[in-house]
Length: 299
Length: 275
Image (cartoon, rainbow over all chains, first blue to last red; front, side):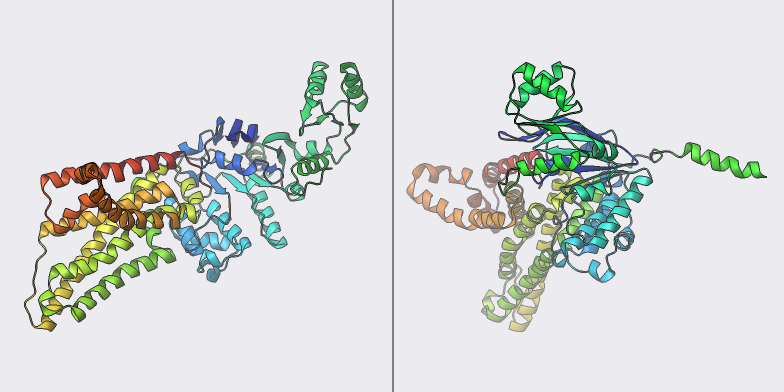
């Protein structure tokens, strides 16, 4: 169980994580989805105490991560597969982890088997590992302590298709045994095939969350206006629930006609108003991505 | 018969929990284990391994060089000790620096500080292990020097000269440990391997001549130098003749050049992001 409550992290004037609240439940795979730079990694780093929160809190298994007496035995963490000492062998990396947790070093070889590294590969220094091998080594480190919770940042990066399939089965099995899995990705389709629940983040804010089924089926209305804030207030005043996704975009479950009437009554000009179709999640995600696109291609 | 078969099945299904049954909370990681892990980490990397080999090899080479090149009347324990000690002044602080900075430069801190979230415990373990390894290295160096002295005197056909007193050996060891702690401090403060190593060489080899020069030019500084110049205050440690005022100089200048920056560094590490 992971509970994140009103979590914010600012860097100077930039709100990298802005009032983020969500829960990752046991027995389920929670996908943490967002474009590059949306705040996924920062949120995860705050969860495990590597980055201090500016405000709000995050707890794992009911406690602050820093208060866990032996975190590796309860929470498996993989934040960046590249962040391993290049001059250490894979096996030694796992032995260190097992030792820190108070487990026999034989656990290292069990984990090497489990993640599909060969004994020869395990004897090589991490410097010579491909990203996929580092990813497997990172997963092995995370699983060493037989944890109840997994926090994985982009674990599929660098894995080949067979590796991605293997990872998916592994995480599914972990959740089916009652474990909590939180994994992030910037690829919707990767998350779609594995997650039970989705948390979508863009520019530091949560823009959607719910079960995968709910979100993928979400219809409703998409509306764009330069006065999105005022429109949001007007809609809320009319009893319509509104979700803001980006500077000038609102989404709501209400019919387009109703939204149009409210906008007219409030005297707010709209630049776009239409029914969001079944692929609402993908569209929303594309818009999020487009807004932050490095190529500068506006939708 | 059929009832006994179906009942357990139903019970299993009915009570099958969505979540795992509550598990026991594991015991807190004992500090002794953090120490052992940090000791292991100091030697199990390629750089750590070669640093140790380098310390041992340089001690042997230095001893050999004294035997080969020193005139017979210079075959003394003091000269062996000095020859063996010089590489230590370079290598031990580098070892201390890397033990801290590799967590950031190699980014292994992401794992270290998620497995042991209390960063002060990790750094305290590194400081203790570094000091212990440093003290052992110096003892080994002095032993190699002693062996060299006996062998060298034998080859030269003279009596071995034992001109390092026990108190001098102790202050020498202490001086080397101080050096190592300076490396540790710079590692904590700078948290970047090349930066901290360069910092150490500036601190240890560029600043001292500058402060000497300043003492020539500035009367106030010349007056206060014993109290403010850490390098100057360490001088008597190498001679093995520490008077009470020398300890006072060492403590005062050490507070300025070692303790305060270390405290600042530790404060920053506790609050910094590990990326």
